[in-house]
Length: 458
Image (tube, rainbow, N blue to C red; front, top):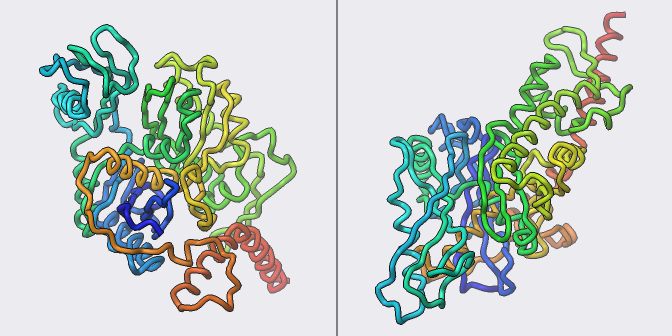
């Protein structure tokens, strides 16, 4: 077990769920997950914290669940994701004339160049979240990815600056602090998701990472190894659920279950003669809902989201086949049936689903490799990037913490499970696997109920 590395914790404050994942790199540079907890989120709308008290409750519940999965963990600092429609980005240029021109360019000079960009003028009420260098120049040499070790008089770079609303940032920081944690860094969610699902070859080929969450769809575009564009689109899974609720006249929980269980992003692929039976409210007759109508509603909203993606790609001149890696879909919303086909049709680019197992060590529970946790795992990777480049202070004394049995793949016969804690966690894993059939059973139960009701009335 590699105890030379720090344990880094990602906290994803989403619109539908809050997730806490603690991880540490093993000797092969892969992430071992040491703790995992989640909770339903109530205080967040479209990626922004609106109700601080509700958000604190949800963060604490997720933390408790994380400690339940591994009681040996000690969590003080977290990397937190940020999204929301208030996020903006701008391009700037910066240069410095070097003092010691007879020496090679050092990391210190690059850090100086980056920190100068934090003085860039931005509108009052906004705050700089991140400054990302794109390509460097040294004297007359252009497009240098990493200028350390070069010699020259003048060093410059183009920068991608990400800004956000001060109040929105304050609300996140407050929620985290009042939950008894410290925000080590705020990371733009599309960048976190990208690092979790993207390999080196994707970066070179050029890709658009589209993270479809509950409240926002986050976009990050990479081309020739450089981050070209980021955007937060204010439509996502929650909008689809609300469209279903309004369009079909059902409850929100029913709309969500129908979307997950029977939803499709392509109406042509939905069966024309398939119907879902929904119980009537308080003695009202049951509703028959056409699966095709459901798909029509989902397709309309999903096409709109993909139109936004195409619009942003056009903004940076990367819409017509320039991205050889195509579109990588991730986040909870990426699990919709036929979404790949719809994405390819709307954007004209090849598409695939991005799973965060690119950087995960083998042998973890399947739940963690779902696209839903891309942001959270990406936050841990961002922490490691800071650690490896000495950007932030990390403790030097690391506690020995093993990967708990409950987060390992269930290959052990149940008789061999030893402690009560482990058995409880095993059960929760089994429950999660059984959830997929929940709606089918639920529907059968409803049909039986109606039969009983009819018998009574006869």
